[in-house]
Length: 248
Picture 1: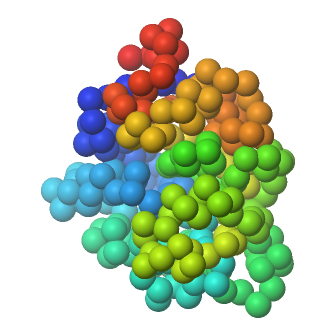
Picture 2 (picture 1 turned 120 degrees about the vertical axis):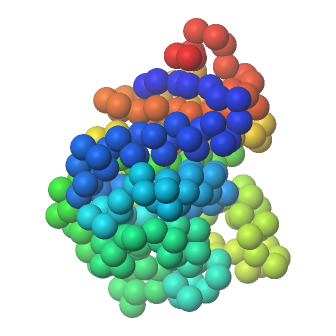
């Protein structure tokens, strides 16, 4: 695990876009794992900017998203499907058939989890996976105490996650209580992982991820065991770390 600290979110976005640009140049048909929420938005804006400048070509790229709320149709403005098209896909030259997002409205969600897992496997695996981190250390919607050997599965959201996500809805009652998510084992199969954390609210989770034990109580701590994981932090998110934990 490498830990890098940047001045601000824009610096992180530029660095992350650099890594994606290098990957696409080396492997135009690469597979990206993508996340939603406010954290990756600066990176997506930087990717769009570079596409508009002719520096990035997504015509052969495939993507697989981490998660989706259960019960929200993709047309709902709070669905992660809507988020991805609004914040990235509609603004670059990626083919719609090359974008893959889990559905939260299947009749048999348990069977569908296996279908989505198989789709990821049949893609050849994820070359680079972008992740955020929750205030409680969750990645995707893998909440504390989740089994590290889980594949794509259905999860009940904790009250902490529901409260954190209510800002995206009119009120807390509208926040879905369940979601479909890639499991820890699915995520860990990616060739490279970049986890981004910004803001002081993430400082404790970041500390536990990097300096604490590997434990299901902090799902992101499993990244200590990944062969090529980078943790990218702004100054506030890195506030609790000791200098020896930081690579640059």
